[in-house]
Length: 259
Image 1 (cartoon, rainbow, N blue to C red):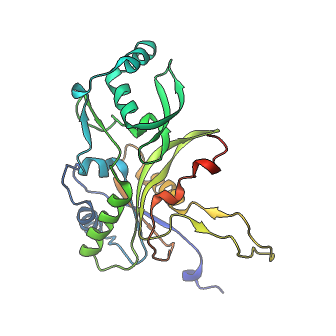
Image 2 (cartoon, rainbow, N blue to C red; image 1 turned 45 degrees about the vertical axis):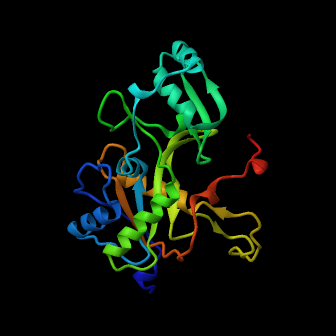
């Protein structure tokens, strides 16, 4: 009989009991202490998945729309769509290239300064206090992930801890949303199977799995959108420690058939 411990499995643990995240909070320390308090301390090779919104709040990425002065293009889009011209102006400021513009809905699909392709530059007003306050993406999500990892490992004696900063994106050609990795630290964002052999001995030639995105999507099933769980532990992957970042997941424009 096969040892039960040898059967592949994955455990996803939400970290609860956390206060509202505020600018300056040390997230790595907070999550370690909360995980210990609920009886699920971090373990070797765990991956800590942290919601982008928690990271942005801790980094003070709030913008008061009353400080944003919309220009002509934003005013035109706002008049046609009924959306807030100040928000549209902020989206335009945070967007490096516009890929698709829907004036009637005020929807801008573009490439952010980070290189992410998403709607409205990832700017969010949900779960943000104040009618005129919105939240930007972290300035450097990979640096954020690395910092959280350092803080957590300083508090808890663990080896090869991985960290993912995740956010919810829509997908081209498919309905529904899923969480993806904006920042990664401690393990390779992509697992490359090229050159390996499949179960019948054939060589794999193109398979590269977006491991960090898969982890982010799995974690969202526990974190949810309204559960008040800003961080999740994903356990059981045993990923090798590696220097990496989420930029591995961004397809180069010369290889992108859709841009």
